Image (tube, rainbow, N blue to C red; front, side, top):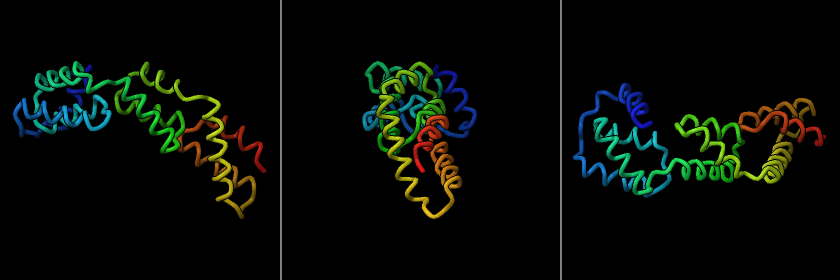
Length: 169
């Protein structure tokens, strides 16, 4: 897996020259991963920026994985939790963002499955009611369209949004 991502990132960042020694970069990478959960793709792009060739990158990635500083499953769970609870993103947007980070489909499914469906629906209903109040003063059908568009852009399922909007008048 790292070699495919390495090749793709290497093509876009070929002009980087080595800036640090192998041991210094390994230590920097450990510190970088120690501060927060990181995606493999993010760490790989850092290693490229720091001037590591593909063999060195693979070695450093293996060290980070073996020391459990880099864990895709843990990253996916943390990402889903943060984006759902703090940013109020819907499942579709979270899934798309994780795919862009190069997280495997299995890890995405497992992390998203930890969202409680009843809590998800209650949270969306609460958000829709708040948004509904902000759009006062325009015709009901326009308000519904505006609110629906907003939450679709936030990654919520349109069928669920329209179901919630039916109860509001």
